[in-house]
Length: 310
Image (cartoon, rainbow, N blue to C red; front, side):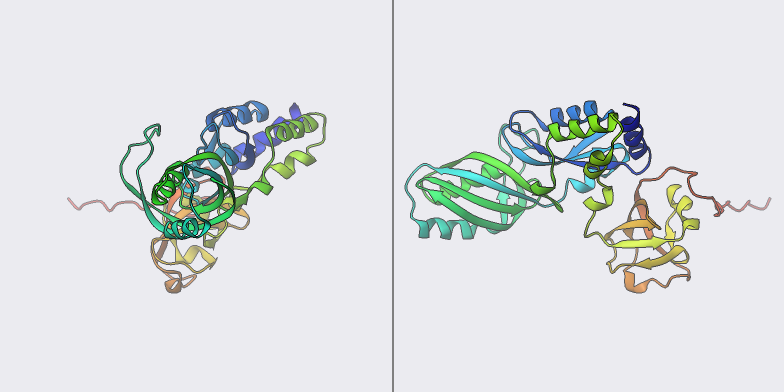
């Protein structure tokens, strides 16, 4: 497996990578991640947005340094298709009216079987659409904040209808910018690795994705390569190191790039309208660094504290 291992090791050793798996019903998300680790041979593997064993669909698997993005990508919006079974008869008009009331901000408490603290939380339902129904079975699509419990949503819709209800089946169709059409099965991944083992890594390269794809929509800032090593040491980016930038506001998360290289993610200290490339002023504080120290030339000088006069 020299060639496939070499390619995957290269990915893991640089900026990491992403594989989009169509999780089957049955195994846990942790088990799927473990299988990806076994198939690829990459030791550092994680995932974003846990799917319960009975749930299928989009599972974003992070390899190598991309695991550092876990906490950020966990916040991505999700989209699901769910099957609800009502426990009594409800007219189409009444059901449509109830569903409409659940669009927007809702209160939820995690189910008893959940691994997190059962504190009341607020989540936003961005879109809620009934796709069809067959008697008491209702198929609907929901786009929502990360951390929304669809099982609880089904239960509450049933209660609002006055008859009760329960989720029968659930599939995640989108996570952040990725849809189910972007995913591959575990069997497809294994086949691609086997082909790479035989000397053809074309299929494997099509499956491997850049972490930057997961950050689609984040504003970006281009810096000079001469500023990159300082950022890797934890220094804040100055306007003097800025080449170009997108529009963003103070405290926004910003993707920091040096050419095509993904340096990391930082928090904007000022709005982009106040940045004047080449001038003084700190503009971004690094929050997550993707590169190693020493990859870029160290042309900066560390600040030395002044000695006190005796």
